[in-house]
Structure formats: C-alpha cells, structure tokens
Length: 154
Image 1 (cartoon, rainbow, N blue to C red):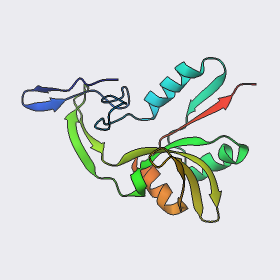
Image 2: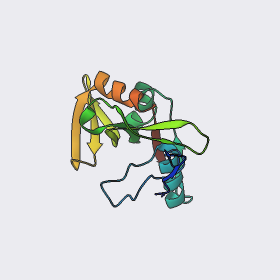
Image 3: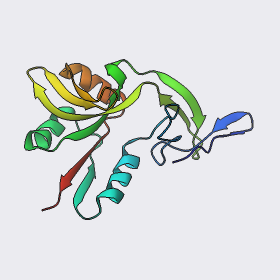
C-alpha cells in the first residue's frame, strides 16, 4: 500500500500500481493496483495450500477453457459496468515514465458463460452479472489483459 505522492519540480510523482496498491483499500477514494500486486498478496495469504499464477497477456477464451471450464474462476481486470475506460489522473513513475490511471478500472471474477455472454462475480454489486463476451473482451484488453488464478495444491 502506498500513498507516496509528491510534487517534484512542479510535477506529480508517485509509485507504480504494478508494484503497490495506490491509496488505502478501505477508502473509496483510492486508485488500486494491478495484477502483480494482487498475485503477490494472494501468494502471501495462500501459503503452501494454493498455487497462485499471474496470467496476464492471455485471451479470455484461453483463460476460460484452461481454467474456468475446469472449475477454477479467474480474477480479471475490466471496468465498472463495462463502460469504456479513459485516462484519469497522471503522475510520473520512479522510472521517469508518465502513467495515466485507467478511469473506471475494476476487477471481477470470470466464473461461467451462457451462449454469447460471460458470467462474472462483481464485488461492486455483490452478485453475478452477465455481459456480452465481445464487450468483456474489449474491456479486459483495454486494461492490459491482466488476470490471476488460484489453484488448490493437492
């Protein structure tokens, strides 16, 4: 977790969401984090009972057939309500690159499908939601094809 934003030379500088949760997860005003951070936290919590894999870069259809069809739901990065993302707050990362937070960034659990729709568990609504597969694929792609899965170790 990091709130380490500061102005240097008149520009906002801060941590990478690929390395830290940006903000406080107990507050709605936080930004969040990306797949490597969640995978690390899950590995820490799971100990030797579960195997955690970051699967970023895979297509949803691949994730679905390799994991969900076999009973392993997959955490994916999409957007709230499947709306289009747009560049939000910008800051400079420690490596000097300019980063734009993807507005409406959200995570859901891919858990099933019906015809041309994916079924996802949405923590915002607390229930299962259904969206057209092509729309979910577009939103997943727009957030960098990020995914994490956890498998029970026999």
